[in-house]
Length: 287
Image (cartoon, rainbow, N blue to C red; front, side, top):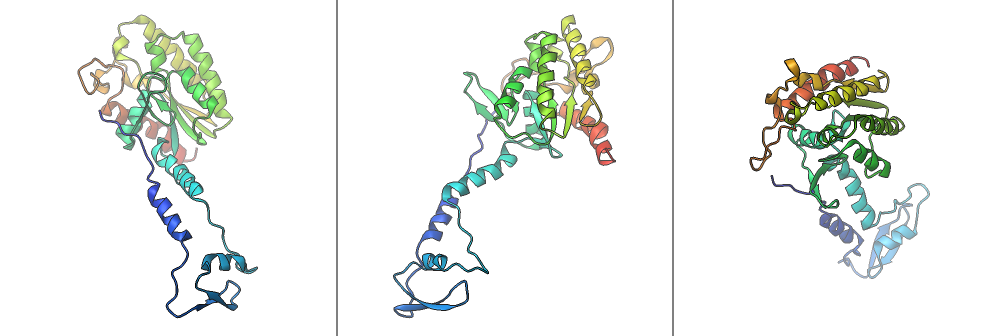
């Protein structure tokens, strides 16, 4: 899959700013040009003078002249405004936090494009705080470093990579608690999503024990005031602890390497329906 980093076209901003700073062309009316100052008093200006500097020098008390930002300020402002559009995955104005499940959700359901990072020595795809291969501890570390801004309303689904790498469930819960405590200080609404089963590990009894314990822990944190939970996990589990494979990717793309970890488009549509039905419909109805 071809990935593209988001970029900013600053050349046009710089060109516009430089054009603004150029002195006005000479007048064709002669050596002097009649100008109306901000205070509505007329004065004469030599052609060789800088019109902009003269006007700024005669400030008016009734109509002060606004100072123009530097080209660097314009570029930084553009980047800040572009951040929400390109680097913050949001569903109904709720910021997504999580692992590759959330990266894929942002791509397939929100039409966003992931970036690729090589800083850790391995290729990690990311969109904001949604990072492929990320474990609970990694997300907590990124939040503590304040890599990006955190919105007042968030949706968090994290823990799949801890299941795959067999992180001790007690450690998962402890780190998740620290992560949640950090979010409660910065957010007004937090929607926790239980971790889906991993079809690749469905024959492993330990996987089911860890999954059940951890998801029950997530749901125990609900207070129905600031913290809410969506039980996504049970939607993909059938009888006798079997996983509904139709909702998961069978292979990685490109290539035929076995996946059976990530939700597919059908699975993400189920996730969207769960969020809408069990949270957003109720929130808009008076939560």
